[in-house]
Image 1 (cartoon, rainbow, N blue to C red):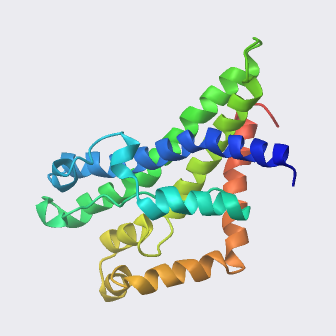
Image 2 (cartoon, rainbow, N blue to C red):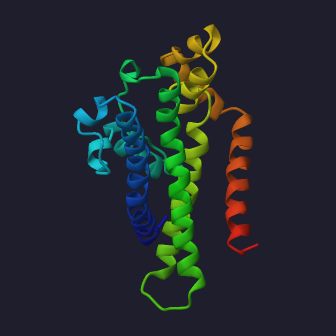
Length: 219
């Protein structure tokens, strides 16, 4: 690869990073906000009730992993520091915890809609602006990445939000043991990512993206 190609790839990577950090920050902020509204100020007291991405950055997941993914040629992936939640502070521990867990993924879904509306605005309205194509690509990445976060975090595999929602809605010995798998939950998640099921997960993402394109009149 030539120096020019490497430079263009690096510029593209650095251009998309703000959308990456914003999406992660909105996700964690939503958790903290709903937890606070439900009576748990653990995250708020730690300064996590904020949209400032710096407060949510995880050294490995938010910085090293994205750069490793870039260097190796993989898609941009990463995560933020999980917002601490103490369900003992909730008036209705199970239901309130389900709301908190669901707030993160659905905030990303809402953000994907916002990015798509901006995408439509820029592509449909005829006007000239510098770096228009770059902005369009950034917004489309914002839509795609937030749909990914929405669906991925709803998977019922710990430590993802979906495992908390599953237990909160169906509390029993099985869902409790699933929720407390610890390291083994992360191992199952990795096995899922490298299993044949992963292609069906991306097929679901593409179905959402095609739905956006259909609604926007692009199909």
